[in-house]
Each structure stands twice: as structure tokens, then as C-alpha cells.
Image (cartoon, rainbow, N blue to C red; front, side, top):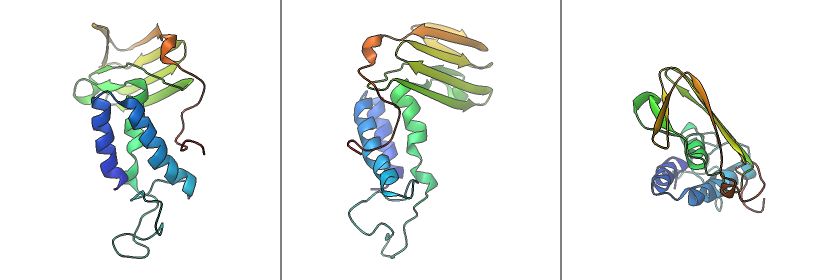
Length: 169
């Protein structure tokens, strides 16, 4: 199928609490596109047929397709647990699960300013812009503020960096 539709399925898996399966699929599908060239995301992610053919046309497939940008939205939620709780990110939560990653970071452009989250094996730091509020463990922290807390080291299982390369690549 298309990466566009795959992103919807992966969002459902995140909602069901299966972020590891989401990360595996991102590595396989989008990592496979990156590894196969030209370093962009394709309209259709099939690797076993003519890489340019689609819709019965020999050059019908876009190899740089905006609708295949699912990882841009999925990774902050799957890895950092960064989710809006209200429209316009007025309230949001951050619940990182780094898995095997050493660190992760994301910037979400909210209407009132950028929400910035940085997490590593020891610490989570969240910059809460004015007009928004971080909801964490039953507490609400309004912006502007910077919130930092210790990340449970059991959430980090090993080394690595955020990447979309397929396993074994």
C-alpha cells in the first residue's frame, strides 16, 4: 500500500500502545525507501517491482511525495509520547519511551510557540510555550516554562540513535 495510508494504520497502533511495532514498520517501509534511493519518501513503497511504475504507467510513481511524510508526525508520538490533549496543543502530554535509543528530540510548532522536547537516558526537558500547558502525572504546568524530570533508566535498553535505516542495513 501507500505510505500515506500506512501512516493511518500506524497512528492506530500508537493509540493501542504498540509503539515498538510502529518503529519497526517505520524502519522497514520508510527506511527501505531511504536505503533504495534517492533519499526521499515515495508515493508507493513497493520494493519488488519497477521502482518508477505505478497506475499502469512506466513512470507514474512519485519518488518525492509529500503525502509519504508520516514519520514526521509519528516519531514524536511513538518515541516521546508527545500528544495534544486539546485543539491547537493548548494542553499536551509527554511520556517518553526511548526503547533502544540513547536520546530523542522533537519540536512541534504550536499556534502560540514551539513545544520543544529533549529526552536522553537520564532526563526529559520540555519547553512549554505561553498559551499551552504540559499535563504530567495529574499536574498541569502552564507556559511559559521549562520542565525537567528524571527518566526512568529502565526505559532505555541500549545504545543507538534515531534513524530510519532498516534492520541490518
